Length: 312
Image 1 (tube, helix red, strand yellow):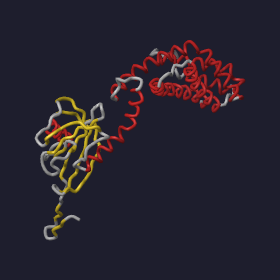
Image 2 (tube, rainbow, N blue to C red):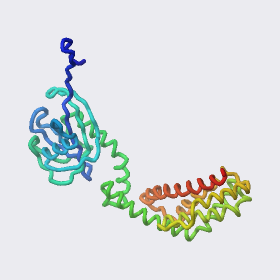
Image 3 (cartoon, rainbow, N blue to C red):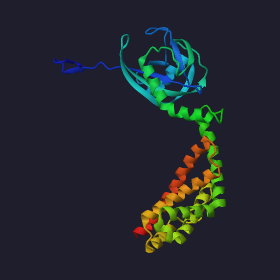
Image 4 (cartoon, rainbow, N blue to C red):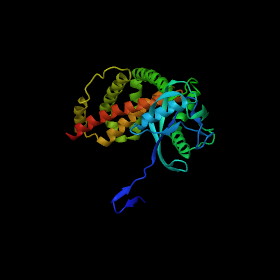
């Protein structure tokens, strides 16, 4: 309840004091802590933490406190948590915690700390502020899947210890895999289409009589995907497929079955890649998922223009 003066008709507000803290984690998954020099909680460990000054931006306050207490300058990555607590020493506090990346300086204790060091994030000492524990838990939950991915790839690439390094490796791998898939389509396009046609005959018997129409369309699509994967311009206009759609409609080829056939066409690319042992490692499978999104996008465009021909 707010205090209220009926004579003055004024409410008296007791707002929480603004507090900022920072989570800095290195590539070894150690979090930067400082050991408090003063009460409250003198001698206990906590995240770099302190009050925001009047009129000070909260992010700037967090970076200032980090430099004052741990001797390093940083940049804010993201907001991690906002927590309100009642403290026996200060009263009501609003604690805002940011993830921060160090950009300069060496870790050393500052004016309000007797020590500053990294601790393994899963093996922390007892922390002074429960809000720090809460924010660190949120941070761990946020990065859990990323760390699992890095740990998996580190078995193949021991030098990977951060998401930035993983992105660099996967970028190179993706370019390599694009070229490999492109060459595979160039070499096996006829065979892929024949295998695809056999699967259509078995799974969608109604399309068997349309194979003479469908196989050239599929080969055209495979050629376009090959060009796309190898960074070349696709040699036809997508809107040409509108006319193809009209022709297929006039031949009474059912549109739902056509869409299913193209889905099987996309699957046939990856089946051939698997048979050729192109996807030999978890990292290649990971990058293949990204390439598959690009291939799906192309197939969606093919289907869109074919369906447009059916609707005109």
